[in-house]
Amino acid sequence: MADTAGDHAGTAQTGLPRHVAIIMDGNGRWAQQRGLPRFAGHRAGVEAVRGVVERCVGLGIEILTLFAFSSENWRRPRKEVSLLMELFMMALNREVRKLKRNDVRLRIIGERSAFPDKLQQRIREAEEATAGCGGLILQVAANYGGRWDLAQAAAQLARRVAAGELAPERIDEAALEQGLSTAGQPDPDLFIRTGGEQRLSNFLLWQCAYTELYFTDLYWPDFDAAAFDQALESFRRRNRRFGRTTEQTLGQGG
Ligand code: IPE
Ligand code: IPE
Ligand code: MG
Image 1 (spheres, helix red, strand yellow):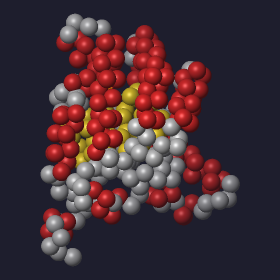
Image 2 (image 1 turned 45 degrees about the vertical axis):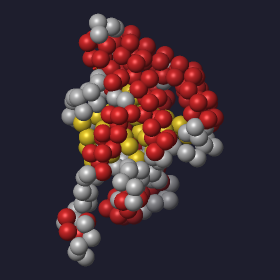
Image 3 (image 1 turned 135 degrees about the horizontal axis):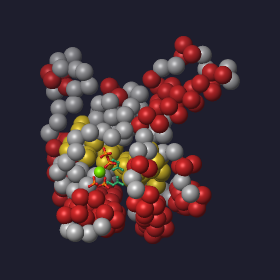
């Protein structure tokens, strides 16, 4: 949401983030550490997703965005890419019923036209099956890149201008935000990256302008509910100022 500066009120009462975004990194190293093929790490990673989703449902968190496959991950060996696609397919097939039971709405964000037709079809079906769910929004970023998101939002603005619906002078942050794949959602309050790396890797670039960052050395398959709670605890202790002074945010000054 473009109005980020005023958007921290929703978290003030509970101390919980409304929107959590996670880079699930370290699957390959988790497997290598055990002498297993990288794919075993990706499979174990799916289990970890289940745990964190359940925790979010239990806590009443509104949105969980998970980075599953980046627009740069196509650069991996062909075999790994196709195994990841298969795993994605299997997870969609297997988990949808359970998501529905938990009132979880599934959304996939990213450039999905690059996926095999069958996978695109499965994505549509999974989204439709959970469209009526009103609990947690589970947003999976697949073939997603923050720069892609910004470029496609810019293209939408250009089309509206070309169609005479929008004057270029009226293009502001809110107008651009409407074209993003996360349009209408609150920005992530908390960003978590597992696996020890401290970078954004082209995740939600625009949306993370004021997000609290949390890094852990744990590999993603080892990131359980207790580890998630630790991240939430770290978030609770942050003083989010959005440009203001500490005195202002603690309610001591105008
Ligand atoms: C993250 O784990 C999962 C994906 C990118 C699909 P990695 O596969 O990047 O694991 P590491 O970083 O090699 O350990
Ligand atoms: C980021 O992980 C993407 C996902 C977790 C899906 P990578 O492991 O691909 O990130 P880099 O390339 O090492 O930064
Ligand atoms: Mg990695």
